[in-house]
Amino acid sequence: MVDRNMDAFENFYKNKTVLVTGHTGFKGGWLTAWLKSLGANVVGLSLPPDSTPNLFEVAQIDKGMISVLGDIRDSETLYGVIRKHNPEIIFHMAAQALVRLSYQTPVETFDTNVMGTVRLLDAVRRHPSARVVINVTSDKCYDNTEGGYSFRESDPKGGHDPYSASKGCAELVTEAFRHSFFHSAPSGAERVPLIASARAGNVIGGGDWALDRLVPDSMRALSAGQPVRIRNPDSIRPWQHVLEPLRGYLLLAYRLYQEGAKFCGGWNFGPYAHDSLPVRDVVTLITKHWGNGRWEDVSPKTQSDPGEAKTLRLDCTKAITELGWRPANTLNDSIRDTVDWYRAYYQDAAADPSDLIHQQIHRYLQRTFEANNA
Image (cartoon, rainbow, N blue to C red; front, side, top):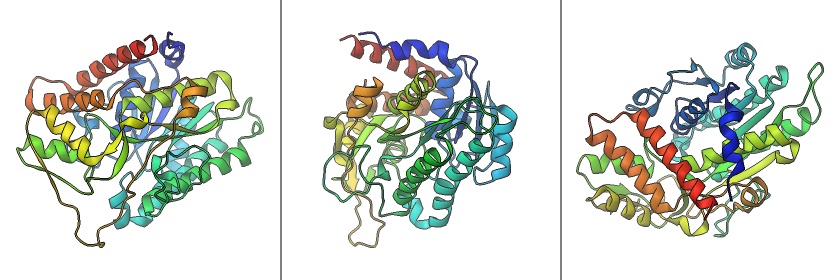
């Protein structure tokens, strides 16, 4: 079967004004690059990149777009961007995105992830140019009691660390605004903004240099000829290439815009169950595709280290059956593409990171087409 949704994207996003918050980040950078290739007029609002190197600079994400460096916690800046540029579609991805960092900066984490979402949705309420808003949260938004089962969209939200709790709160904020302010068109507006939230798995891909993430830590170590130091090798996560959930976000925004409120609410975008694997298996695949290297377990010997959930899995039945989205990559595909990107960056002086992004988008769409026509 031909993926009619993806076929429509090129025409759908062309010339539409799309706001991406967090466009200087890893996922935001990939989404911005994809939207620009689809002909969208992209506006970005974000803090400056928080690592060196970073995808935003090495891939020149700011070329061909309007890039505003600002803080979503600043209501005046946020409202000013929306009022000035009148985006039709908003992807809200600005966040403090690291679990371990949230233990060090809990106030900043809650302020960014919860109140940043409040300020964005309030700006949309005050200036309802947007037809569609996608709030990107996390698989960690669920109340994880370590039952080992795959979380469904209807499961309770929660979190036992500041990051996870902040994402659970952001989900509650999104629902509260949708029911309180976006159930009918504001005074003077032709239509009501349509709001949905998206929850992805553990995303990997080229151009992520954040600290305390498995792939960036692995690439730094392997490129320097050092062993990969990992914590909690038995922890299970829903690993997926960055392009998988981004295709879900793009598809969700498209279906909301075209077909309306039945696509509001929360959506999971994760891998098939057999690709939710322990950290040790993933790092073994990483070293295999790199061609050499080894890993060592540096798990804490005491309970003083900040804790993370042992098992996370997502049930994506809703997205598969109702939205028409399904994973196109195997985990092996995702790791191979990720390692290839970093190998080119570290070992090929002529490699252009921007070209690498577009080559991988093209190859991924071919893989999507083949999977849907198998």
